Image 1 (cartoon, one colour):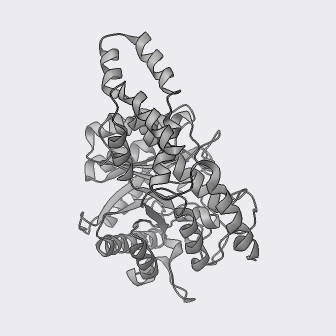
Image 2 (cartoon, rainbow, N blue to C red):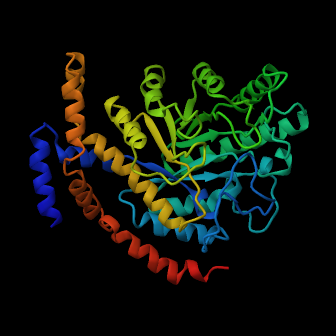
Image 3 (cartoon, helix red, strand yellow):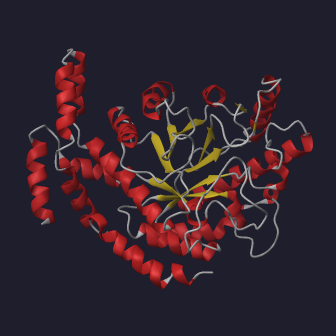
Length: 416
């Protein structure tokens, strides 16, 4: 049935000039960075305190990972149901310290050796983020922009330490590790001084990036946000701040499609950014009215994001990671749904006749553009996806959910 569907799809797509085999080969080379924090509701295992920084994971579905070993076990299960080889996106609060209390500004590569070994054995890559939230030194909502030098320097030291850890990960796994800085800094009400916090943030970043790293192994990025809980009126690290800082300092600007006004579309920003930057980083999520980080679905904006990556010939220039956390459903299923949907969106984009559509637009044939775009939605894209899953040895269509339910019964339900 799968082979039959694939043959039928191949004939139809050939009629509009699409080589399905080439599309599948391109898809197989795309590594998506799966965020570890979906597995434990962004808690980490430092046992420091409650989640903070304007972040909220809602729900209490049973089976949450309670330690590093359980988290790794869940990641293994998720990747067994996702086609291809990908990356794991880690936060610093997932250090393996064997019960020893280690301050975040004192973290070293040795605290992530277990993660490197885990990735190496499975042929995976790693990305890395400093954790500037859920910590006593971030209790008042300011970190790298804090007016207190002691607090600000603590977080500068933390980011310096995590860059070294990222370089270590890249060297060990022989592939670049994306090191991404996001901070929760801002104010609930309209600030009297917008300049000074951003000046302090700029000075902090200058200090963090003052030590050169081997760009073969670590890629630096900064991530903006429009607002958060408790910082509704002003965020220090705005899009304009980071876009300019990244351009001036030759680092990456990371776009999270939940970190903008609901009427803004990251898909529209991608080609503009790529005109002026060699690379671009993405965190793909699903905002519902605000940065609510719902599980990524196969929706219009995700497809448009994928289209722009493909249209801009930027598959090797855009670093794709996911970022959501839903504690109301099975956490392993959430990973699988999100990862497979991002891959589906990329496949859909790879199966489009972009040159033909672009020519129609250039010639002013807007009726043809609209008509063809709508007809493409009914092409047998699903049959190609089924074939891709089958070729990669993962369950086809919803059959993966049976595996998750068995795992829930045998593993997740037994956790405290």
